[in-house]
Length: 554
Ligand SMILES: [Zn+2]
Ligand SMILES: [Zn+2]
Image 1 (cartoon, protein in one colour):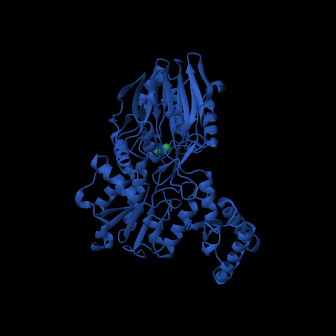
Image 2 (cartoon, rainbow, N blue to C red):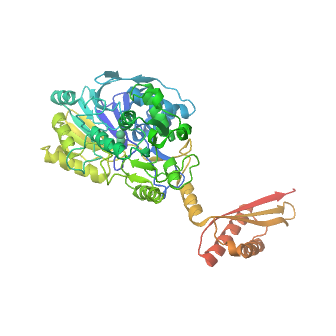
Image 3 (cartoon, rainbow, N blue to C red):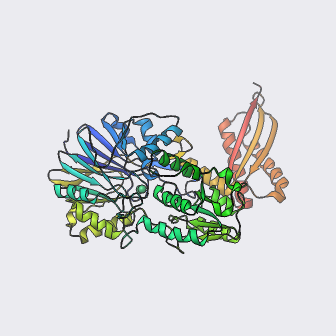
């Protein structure tokens, strides 16, 4: 058995999302992060989320000693319920992260596992590993970088981080500790790459508060709506503080906003006076200038309250010229169109709207180039693999490391499913492990394959036609039907004619392939083929055709 350290990547490379890295030494495995990715709804209609293929963990189930979770964002915790169901092991994370994880596990029919809350600078022995948790700044409290030590040396894993020297909670990133770990010697650094394309520094979260203060002053006579990422507790804290300063009561709206604020207030990560928080149903009892609503929907999500308000479809709240809406979030790539729709609709209703291009009402949670350079110069790793990014970002991060003086032979681009080995002689790629995506539909995992997605796309584009018939099992005579039901097919004006046509087509199919003497599946296929041809020929469409044949009598 190898006594080298093996590192396998099951997610987070070539993508932002479903982060998971597996560390293996002798008989012990620890798993760092278990996130999800949000699917592109055009390519994967109806899919709620995408998580890792964890075949490798299942095969090595007995070795898995724990899950180390860097922080509570969905791309780091969202896959945890699915991983734990098949490979249970204790979870190590901050209290804030565990609060969000426990909520999630509860939703998944009360999965129970051991959870260990760790504090900054704690060192935990897990099998052959010793893991130190290092406080970093990020857009959610309780975020850690990790120093993972084995007899072969230390691996520094950045988690998600930025350098904020004036953070809202007064706890800047523990650069001193990172420097000490670097001085002790780091064999390999895995560092996040989200903002590596951006020059300079990420602004401090507190600068957002200053800008928001100006907006509170500017809109002091209006009802205020502020939308941001639900997990950005420090943003919420700044807004709560401003609400208190301007004597406004705060209502939370949106499932994740309510959930995160609940956990954060309970754990003391967010401070709010109970009398300043009101239920959304009480909104109308206050004057415009006395209330503030914090809500989800900053990404233009069609079902979020904000989108529905913008469309005038949200019963309780009607937006108009007395309202100001502030987007305190950036539109994530791919969501720009949806966000622009919401902004346009709000403006059309007469609202004042502030969104990011107009004002510094959002800062990122991820390190830009100059911050990454500081991390590299403190950690001074012998080897480097960039993580948490699309390929273009990983490549830029490799370039940055080389510009900072790392020899090219020590800078590596890794890919999903690759297994790398750290030994006394250095770092090298040694093979691959099973990897891929599991598509999650509701609470079900792994039961959606590409044929389901193809059907959904066909349904969305071309609709469905169902043909129903009953036949006598003995004589093979047709006893009922053909009945024709169509959904999502746009021939309303000639519906009657189309139905008559299809009946004719089906009766023709039955003369080619009668019930008597034919295999029932062949009859079904014949009908499907013939009806599909009819649509193709007459309408240039390929709806899903389902033929339901019922045997009557024996
Ligand atoms: Zn994050
Ligand atoms: Zn992340």
